[in-house]
Amino acid sequence: MTVFDAARADLHPCLGCDFCGMNGPCSQKDDGEKLKKQILDADMMVLVTPLYYFGVCAQLKTVIDRFYSFTGKLDSKGMKTALIVAAWDSNEWTMTEVESYYDTLCRYMNFKNQGKILGTGCGNVPMTQRTGFPRQAYELGRSL
Image: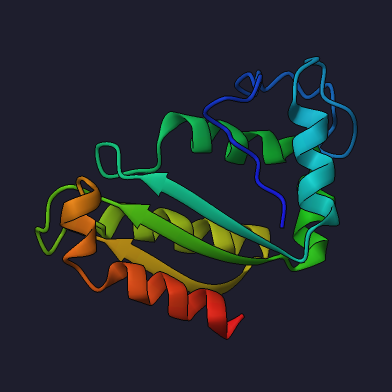
């Protein structure tokens, strides 16, 4: 298992400059090439994020935006993916937008969704421990 810590990586936002032509090296000299190699070498990718204003955090969005430089390779791979999101609140609509975003990303990138853990009421460790979401995450992992 390989972990790419987007929060601590030296990863800059996609400039939309098209230097890569969607299938080549990025013009930016950062951890993007490392990220690309790790993803293309992987059998599966798990996207993990806290919920920020009903979407993924900026760091994960930067990772996803950087898929641009290898969209063709990633699309043709049929990558297996899963989504894990943690949110403080428990309103029934809390995860609607982030789930829709992920579903659209899977459809566009030809990702094969293996599961979603949409953890509401998970604002801190004690709150999370009182929910069934840690068990769901364990079962998802076990099923893979």
